[in-house]
Amino acid sequence: MATSLKNLSDYTANNFVDISDKRFGLVVAEWNREITDVLAQGAHETLLKHGAKEENIYRNSVPGSFELTLGAQFLAQHEEIDAVICLGVVIKGDTKHDDYINHAVAHGLTNVGLKFNKPVIFGLVTTNNLEQALDRAGGKHGNKGVEAAAAAIHMLGF
Image (cartoon, rainbow, N blue to C red; front, side, top):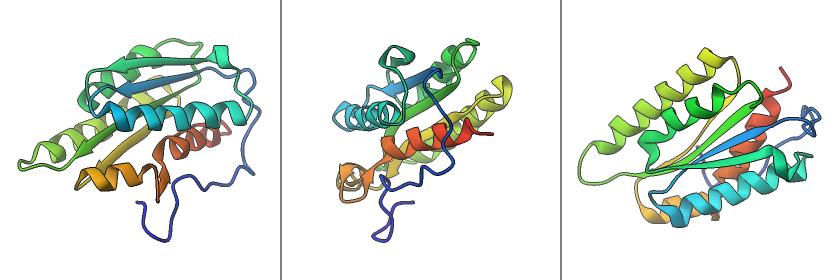
């Protein structure tokens, strides 16, 4: 979790493998697009920075964070996709919807990764309010999209 002691955009690239021939799928929720587009940009730029080719990065949109799981499965089922990065945001509201969505997405993405034996990254921003979400989408806590892309690259080294 991002805190004042941790910036989501800080990572160590020491264990990164060559990703010049790897293919990445980005699944991006359209809900809260002003945030998810920034997350996607951070992930995309991080992949390019570490050697991914533009033509090997595929972006698919889903309506909301709940749909990230099926969107991930649609991409992960393709043998040529090496890793899937899922990006969304769920902001706590007056109901418990955030708990249900966050748990469903976490379990669903874990299952997709295990089913297809490839990295499926949980890049879901889960916050109490809009300000906290913005802080994790290029704000004072960095960009969760950068963190998710770095995690995908790291996992490809196993």
